[in-house]
Amino acid sequence: MKHLRLHRWNVTPREAAQIQLELRERLELNDRLPVVHCVAGADLAFDLARNKAIAGVVVYRFPEMEELERIWGESEIQFPYVPGLLSFREAPALLKVFERAKNTPDLIFCDGHGYAHPRRFGITCHLGVLLDTPTIGCAKSLLIGEHDALPSGAGAWTELRDKEEVIGAVLRTRSNVKPIYVTQGHRISLLTALKFVKAVLDGYRIPRPTRDADHFVAAVKKENKNAAAGV
Image (cartoon, rainbow, N blue to C red):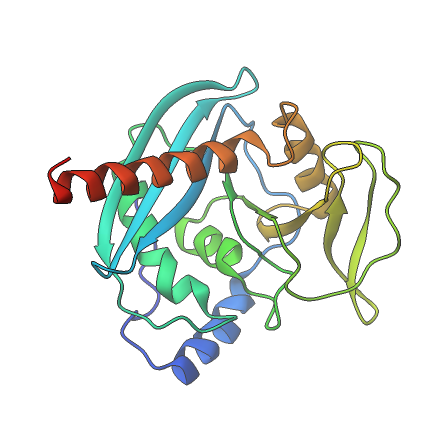
């Protein structure tokens, strides 16, 4: 799965913020999806002792959610931790893993924010633009915005707003459990993003694609640490 090479990664935080503003011009917030037969979940873990980012992607046949493959890879961490610029720390590792995918996903679920971002260009948008693929952000915590009170039942949702602008949705995936924050990444509308998130729920708070990817990279990190220790 090839990606567009639209900018350098070896940049300062100020340059990175400017790149986000420039790439935002390419962002599409309306539906431009193929018929979705294949979806993927993406996430990372960090081994700071070794200065490594461990990226993982799990790919499924949709709507059956039959797993087709899982791929991981390690990359050197090249960018500091700067809130709002996490894509410059995380995206290079993920792009390398997507390049090795045998099954090209029609839609990617990311553990992170997309349009609900101070510059309206979080990692989910960044990956979507560079991969030229529809993406949905499924974040566990709030980065920016406010919302009305949310009913306690599963499936309830409300708009996430920044002043007067709708920047995402707050979705209750399980009754009486903390909600998640669904945001558009690229080439998808908010209502369609919500529809697909609900389609991959399987009784847990976190949608299956990003939950599986999270567990996958955590397991790889543990195995690598044990191997290094000779366990």
